[in-house]
Image 1 (tube, rainbow, N blue to C red):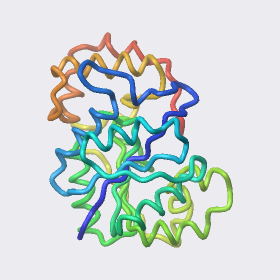
Image 2: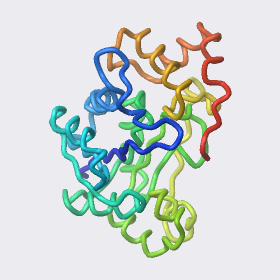
Image 3: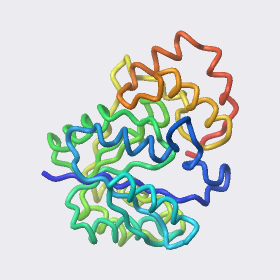
Length: 241
């Protein structure tokens, strides 16, 4: 089975505009995410799915510099954008990653892909049953299933939230939940880049690993258990469900 990572990325965030271009030290958060994704063992193709808005041209420049593929589509209809991206590059199975998860663990991505293969399902994720830290989000599904789900996408939410039409129709899709082992369970831990406090928090974590790309979820958890005061930095950030 072939798998393609599709990263949804745009700069028009309402809470923290241009957040994925914020710098850590040497790299922007988007560049850092791409470098981490390249450590996955199960995926050879990484694609940035951005929008037709020319404000996102810097995202395309980063994709080109990083030597990965890119595609431009609808700004509002993200479901359509990902489907068109998948069709354009003839993707069979998609690993969906959002650009606000810059320290996603490549090992969790590989585990999700392996679980997807072993369970012969339409959709697998660790986002329905929240057990991993928020920011370790991964979804795996076939392009065929995503196209089928678009038939049920009637509302704005259905179109803006790529896999919502799969998740709300469990009778039409075989769905598998990936649940964290005990040493990775921390569902209340926020590792997503949503607001400025998250930028400060994530930057602190990344710099503590000297901007390496190969640290994993357990390393992050152990680091934060030793430095509990860091958790105050973004503790008041409210997350989207």
